[in-house]
Image 1 (tube, rainbow, N blue to C red):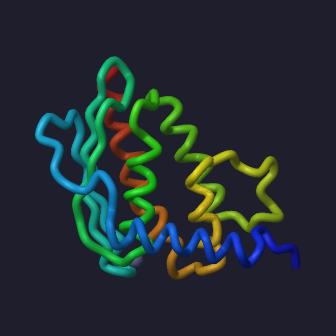
Image 2 (image 1 turned 45 degrees about the vertical axis):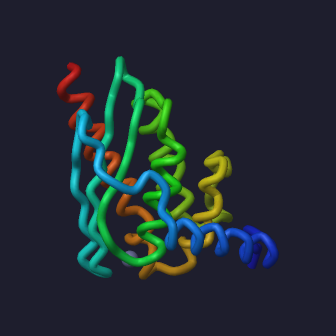
Image 3 (image 1 turned 90 degrees about the horizontal axis):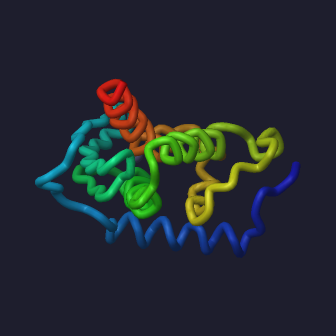
Length: 153
Ligand code: ZN
């Protein structure tokens, strides 16, 4: 069996997740949000409200509120950090890469998705019960992007 990351890297990744889970970034309301979308993971009880502000097809501001386990909070925190300044098409592409990373066994991910700092979430696929915790923020993002692009057509 191939190991995707070394034990040292896995421990580092875990520290980052714990830190973001305890002190989520971009947590709070966004009064001038263009889109507010809610997501729920009933398996674990995670809840998420994602606020996005779009300016000319670019995500100019992003925040989230909600409660849930450390992985759901950390994933939302890391996601919001990555999204700011992205075009909606790039955000959708990032959704696809992260979704692959979280749901497909590393050996079968070809090419290996380039997800930057979000690689800290790469160990989650090993824990099927936690995958929905980690993907919640991303599925919620996808709904928000779908609504946004439908409106622009
Ligand atoms: Zn959870």
